[in-house]
Amino acid sequence: MMTPSASLWKTPRTLLVLMSIVMPFTFSVWQVLLNNFAIERAAFTGAEIGILQSLREVPGFLAFTAVFILLALKEQTFALLSLLLLSLGVAITGFFPSEYGLYATTVLMSIGFHYFETIKNSLSLQWLSKEEAPAFLGQMISIGSLSALAAFGLIWILIEALQLAYTWLYAFGGGVGLLLVVYMWVAFPRFESKISQHKHLILRKRYWLFYLLTFMSGARRQIFVVFAAFMMVEKFGYSVAQISLLFIINHVLNFLIAPKIGRWIGRIGERRALTIEYSGLFFVFVGYALVENAQIAAALYVIDHVFFAMAIAIKTYFQKIADPADIASSSGVSFTINHIAAVAIPAAFGLIWLINPAAVFYAGAAMALFSLFLSRNIPSAPAPGNEVLVGKLRPLTTDT
Image (cartoon, rainbow, N blue to C red; front, side, top):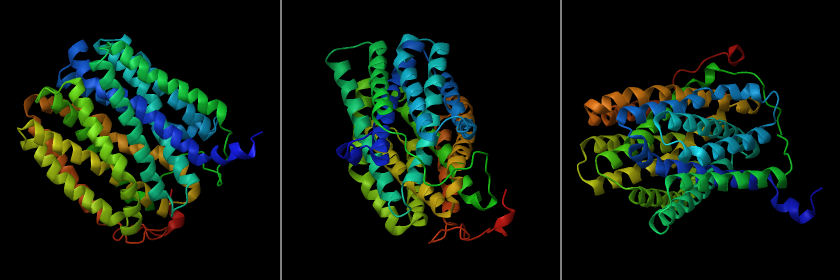
C-alpha cells in the first residue's frame, strides 16, 4: 500500500512523464546511429534503407491489433511490455551488422515502439481533460526532447571520447531503457481508466477528417524521418557526431518551445495551428529539393522538426470530437491509418531516390498542400456533431 507521500508522485501523470523519457531515449540512440551504421557496417544504399524503413512501419500498420491484445492485458501493462520490447530491440541491434540482421532487430524494436505509441496516446487522452491536454502534451514533447538530448549527448561523448563500437553504443541505449521499464513496473500501482473502453474495432463516419489528417501525417513523417536524414549523410557527408549535434539542436528547440506550442494551440485552436504547420512544410520540402548547401540543409531540417510539435493539434482535435469510450480503439485504428502510407512510401520512394532525390521532396510538398486543404475544414470549435465545416454526416446513430 502506498504511503501518503508516495501517492503524491506515483500518479498517472508521473508515469506518463517517465514513459516519455524512456521511449525517446532508447529510440534516439537507435535513430542517431542508424544511417551511419547502415552505410558503414551493412553497406546500405537508398534502396535498402527504404526497405528497412518500410519494414519498420509494418508494426505501425498493424497497430489496430492493439484492441485485441487489450482483451487480455490492461493498457498500462501493455504499454510497459511494449517499452520492454523497444529497449530489447535497440540493445541487440549492434550485434547484427548485416542487411537481414538489421531488418530483424528493426522489426523487433518497431513492434515495441508502435504499440507503445498507440497505448500512450490512448492513456494520455483518457487521463487528461480536454482543457489541460494541449499544454500537457506539449510538456511531454519537451520532456521527450530533453531525454533525446541526453541520448544524443551521451552518444557523442561515447564516440568522441571513448570511441566505443556500435555494438556497445546500442547496448547502452537499450540497457538504460530496460532498467527504467523494470523500475516503472515495480514502483507504480496499476491505474484504472475513468471510462470503460470499447474492446472492438471502431470506425466512425463522423471521424473521417481525423482519419484523413492522420493518413497524411504518416506520409509527411516519412519524408523527414527517412529521406531528409538520409540526405544529410549521403549528399552532405555528415558524420555520426555531426548528426548527433544536429539532433541536439532539434531537441533543444523542442524542449524550449513545445510547451509553448501546446498552450498556443489551446488558445488559437487546431484549425489555425495546422494551417500554419502545413503552409510552412510546403516551403521546407521545396527547400529540400533545391538545397545544395550543407548549412542550409541543416536549417531546413531543424525547422522541419519544430513543426512536428504542432501535430498535437490532430490529437486534441480528435479528443474534442470523440466519444470518450472510443479513444483506446480509435488510437489503434488511427495508428494503422497513419502507417498505410508509411509502409509504402519508404520502399517506393527509395527507388525514386536512386533516380531523382529531388522528386521525393517535391512529392512531400504536394502532400503538405493537400494537408493544408484538409485542415481548413476543421471548425473553430470542434465537438461531437460539429466535426467538420463541409461534409457533415447525419445521423450520428448510423455510424459504424
